[in-house]
Picture 1: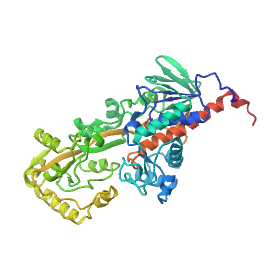
Picture 2: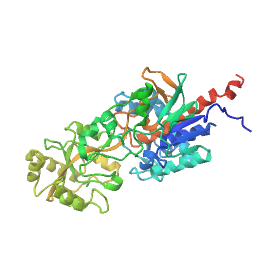
Picture 3: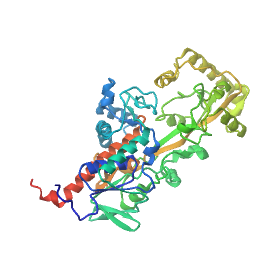
Length: 488
């Protein structure tokens, strides 16, 4: 029979937010023997993780090993830091890379299915190339983000973690220089350890303008795919308690067409035979550049580029999608959002770009992809990684179309409570506030200007959630009278 827990607190650990990070934290804390309360402001669990593909970036996993992929946490760390120009926090990033393998194995043990097979997209279970990677690290689970959430929630229930929905935390309880719990509807719920996993700030327009001004580039075309609970509650906690924030100005904005309003699962995809040109009318990028870097490329061209395609490409769009549909493109052309002209020269005039630049760029594009080798931007490699034949149809059949491509899909934000390598939250003085931990988008220091590999944010949520739960449980155990009476 186990010894009784300390009754000076309502719980050992309180976790704020029941998305992927909060679920991982509550499960790992409960596995360590802690009494855990999981609070969720919304009426259902899952947060942004449930809306995602569930893709996880991780190194040195059994899935990679089964497929002969040689990888290590040190190699992942070097790649991660280099891609972000060493502007993120090395200690927390090293922890993230080192813990990614154990977290994947932990999830597999809980019942998540990631088959040891090659995947060609973020929606096919297995191991995939996801974004800017030196080796394949994209682990795609069966049943996507929803499946991850369901597995974690079953573990939560099995471990008797108390769950309270519709419970938005108003503040922290801080006494004697340490966190002692949270405030809910004016009442205190106490615990010697609190994990903030309340999500990002994408759902609050004012905070987005403040902490991710680049989102303003898209203007009215901006749309948000993060969970509605991502209201930036951690920012208020930081301001009230002198906590440091890290990652201002960073987040994940996907490049989409001006008329797009949904994530690609619903919106569909643009035609493969398309060319992206800058304001000078010249081709300026790999049209399938990973979303980690494509917004930065657009920034070099004034914030957006034109996507040009012909009528055969429009007509070949598969039916049933909300945005990239053949008839929808015509509707947007009638509104003037999509430009449409019988010749490339006439289209160039509508685009206000030099006609000779556009026609030369299209001719060059057609010649390269007839051969299947893009010696200018190496797009044939991006297409091959997706299993697409790089011998693309020419852009040759009028009417021709052009639409602005903008960083308009806001997926997640990276401004979070600054954490150390143990997920402890730091004050503005650089010292950890005892008893406070953070995970997921509410944690800052690891998610940087460049989104490293598909699944960076989901892996970040689950890895930091798992570590934060373990650290919080260890603190609660160390402070309990039972622990103090243990012989040294």
